[in-house]
Image (tube, rainbow, N blue to C red; front, side, top):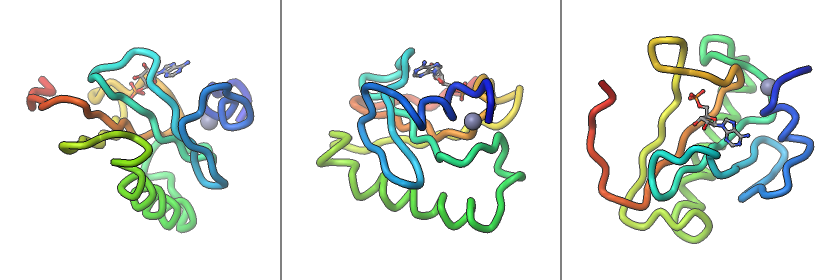
Length: 112
Ligand code: AMP
Ligand code: ZN
């Protein structure tokens, strides 16, 4: 999609942590934990409610791949948190669905 940063990154980003046909992973520019990645599907959509059946299938594959890479590639020993912000109340700022992957420390639980 034109003017979407995450669609542009799919084509060109000089520091991808991981990249395949379905999605890529980059480090968040404003990390909220010692390790903060974004897993970004290559197909543009903003909300989970917009997903096609292929998007749904791919999201399952993306979760499986994240878990497979969690230790060896992402160094998330000790556990991690996945977050998908949806809409204004959740503070979604990027109009292209992405999964936050947070870790590297013991985290609290206070989204308020
Ligand atoms: P959200 O608020 O859930 O939509 O998350 C958007 C995330 O994208 C935020 O955590 C931002 O720090 C991150 N972000 C914005 N621009 C960039 C960028 N150029 N490179 C990496 N992460 C970015
Ligand atoms: Zn996009």
